[in-house]
Image 1: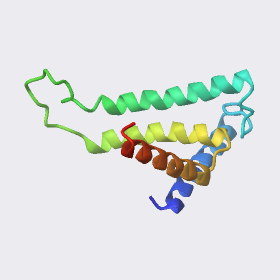
Image 2: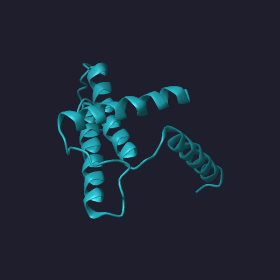
Image 3: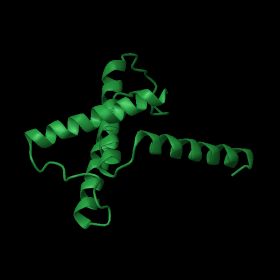
Length: 125
């Protein structure tokens, strides 16, 4: 993915969060939050769990995952599935914005971790 697109996703999410704060004052604290504070840890946990809930909604669209199921459901709404994934990403992006993580920070850590997992694979981790 082009880093410009990743940066745009961060910008869109932060723009939404600013609009939410304007429409519903207090919905978000001023960010980046102090992660050492209990109330901010609770907020971050709640935000992450909302993202997890959206992922479960996406998984609900997968009907043929049970190995013991004989019949297959061939209906699959790709757009609805992807929309739920986007909802999850939005919560995870909010989590990153709230903690002061930038698109560059995420990209750099992604590349670093990718190197680690490839090294593990080569070393039979």
